[in-house]
Length: 389
Image 1: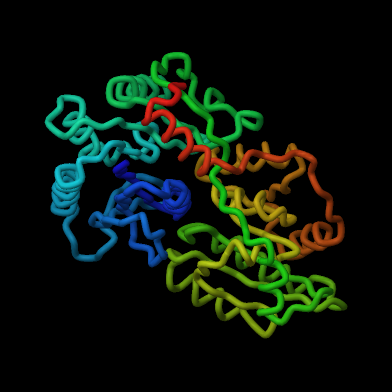
Image 2: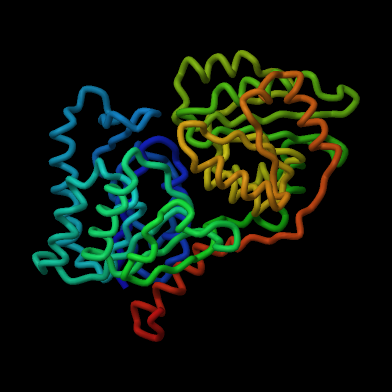
């Protein structure tokens, strides 16, 4: 099966890594990953080929679209992206077109997606099935009625199925999208998309870092890094107030998109026991090896926390409801603890970190983390007609 998977990340990197994990699960198929955000130097599975569209991003308020490469004209970049999209369809003739988030989000990219969807529907492009790959929670909109009406129109007219990457025992789509009953195509909950750590990740990494069995490892992270620097600075300051009687180490990952001035400021706060880096491809192993994670509350980070079962404090991105809603639902089941702005004071945060390190409790709730594998299996059954859900 030939598959084109479209993914546009505009602020963080969570959308890209969730998409990559689904691509990874589609082993045995020819997968072309069409990515349109800032380029990330990430190894790809052998069966996945990436086509990088001219990069576009948005500001943290999600108002302005701009090229990732300075000096490039926005309209020229848009035209080039449209051309590359059509070229891919004409050369590949895919059996399946997976579209991450649209039409539930990425309205700013309708200029390139709508013509392709129309071309498939009108048979100007080769015939293929079209599936929406959707995160569990939608952000709020200024005019929800008009928004949901537009989404339903595009979804029912141009898509063949909707895959929601969440666990319905925690949260269903209708909690953030009222018009679920109007969806005429199959709606499938796949479970969360989460990569599992290697079984020996904890002892292996702790040995590599020189951390003894009694040593304390804290990992702080901010996803892509466009937002989150205040949290990381607070963690570094709070770390200095932790119990000095124990060997303790703090590894801070700012994210690849952290502003240079913020990264330099955080680096100046590093020391013998505090290491600051932008990114590590082995982040999951760091969480598996950690005694505590303090982080933003994006989808991927939360799934990494669940997969490694590391005690965790998370600070949701305040711009919209998505991260807080998910974090509070996970906290309700004892899977993590949610931080508020008032908790970022060094003394208060240090107390919460110390408490989390001292009181390790395991939740009985086990979320479905097999979303990538479930997605691949469902698509194969559906595409090859073994079972239509």
